[in-house]
Image (cartoon, rainbow over all chains, first blue to last red; front, side, top):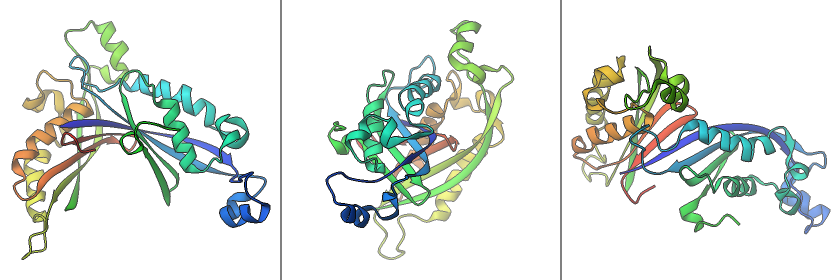
Length: 142
Length: 138
């Protein structure tokens, strides 16, 4: 039997999907409205999954207060109410699609000390979501 | 293989306290959950059974049977109960979502005779849930 704890967080941010490797026309074709030069925003929902043995003293895989403060410090403080393209260094180099946001969040949380990070699920809107899973990604987030 | 999921809800009270720890340590580790009067949640439980559909009925298992198992094993045991004091299987354990999910797996696993129990997902709130799966499956 394997136990996985899932915790849900939210942040709001803006982004613009634009690749410097593509022409203006190609960017418009690839990204449509998401290429609007002024950017646009979403309320993102992030589900963080961690696994590990249940500590008999606490009955917990990881203390939620520790997980919450780690996610707050590593992700929410850096992402919430920002323009991702300009204010999160990783997105100066890569397009902040939700795929890449999921990878970056995984990278930032990978070293959570109290339990093993299994994966990240991120919902950009209620109609689309993306998952980045340690097993299926071979453990690398890059 | 097909996975079939049935959802139920139950409401229960609990508190987190380890008698081996001092009151100060209990408050530090468990925070508000250490309130000696307890507090409660509306739990949502999703139970997933995996198997091949029967060629005659087209069903992995009869959902009516699963509904009855969930009623008998989970609702009657946990709904509108104080988990620490009224669920004997949790005696000596802290009724965290992890431990309650594990107990639900242990209660249901032997009762599912058509198909195999594949996953128990227990939500304490929309923002916190625990998955219990067989070893080696995620």
